[in-house]
Image (cartoon, rainbow, N blue to C red; front, side):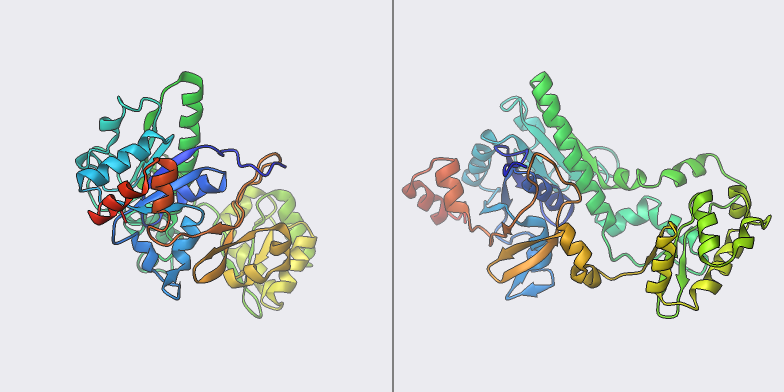
Length: 390
């Protein structure tokens, strides 16, 4: 495997903050791109989110390791000029301001496309760059509610009286992954056809694309409820058992010591099990509740039945199997080292990930201005004195 990332030599100017945009550009970093993060004097809000260590956020660090940081006053002519000079020597721009903000600064795709015809410009927003809802504020919990995602979960959980609390920002992560893929596609398009383009990534469409069954069921309603996989109680916790196909079910019946289930007319076929799913889950739970979660997992997995105990993130970090696979890697900032997940993909001939430093706000300004833009010390000091750069 090479020590060079596939995107080595690619330069990205990152005008993003919060989660969706920074997550996408961190994926570009992990594939070898040089990412220059442009921040306001206040800095990305996530810099101040817990967990904090000596004032530095590991939450921010997971999404921003390996990026260079510069502070620009984009409302000043000289600050915007520096931004334009950075864009001039870049391949990709990524931004997730509310639609219209970059245009108002003279940094929107419309203002740049003629001067930089090969530029790939990616905008990430809640509801898209145009339309009635384009300027509506949209964070992940809002999108979870607006997209049908939360109501689908409520429908699947009869015991709940209201949609579930949002703690994991699925919309941000999914949109980031789509943005990452779209940028690669646009770069390939540029390679083949010689031109850049604007990419419009939306959180709401990202979530809709997760709702595969729900999208079709909304158009063609079924008279039968789909099987739902649910936690089954054990003597010390819970397990998930998923007998997806006929072989899974037959192996489950044998492993549970209930071979008669295979001939039971309620369960003998996939269609019959779908019609009697709650009864089947109840019978399986009668078996699991007499055993520990670990024992259930061992017995079922040995029999070829998909099964897992419910684990915490802390347990996974300490899991020797995950460590051996290399599922985590170390990042570091001025407050020390912390672990982040390795990207979920590996290349046989290219590097992904690796130790990354998280820059403090504006830490790399001199390096960027001198080495990337070629400014001398007096010009840099002049920009600093005018507070156009920090």
